[in-house]
Image (cartoon, rainbow, N blue to C red; front, side, top):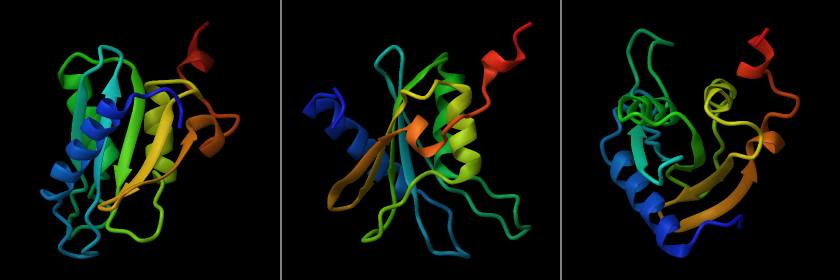
Length: 138
């Protein structure tokens, strides 16, 4: 695992689990929680929110990033995504791009389920050769 201490990992796990318990997933019944660690060491959580008018719902990572931005965070350092298990889940393509907006390829992406951490990657591994804010600087 990349350099995150055990206490911080436990904080991310707890925040994602708590957020997951608030998921609004009446259609898929696939509750997801996410926790984002920002550049100030704060943890921001979110859950997936489905909508009858597909595809108008949004993912847990989107909710967590929104909470981070609203709290003044501008850089994501790590994200933990928790699904129901036992399959390992990763952020969807849209969320990978949203995460890229707030970090480059060294963002730590951690997959978990209620039993604990299952896998981890960098964003570069999940979204190689990505397009980001630096491409728009003139």
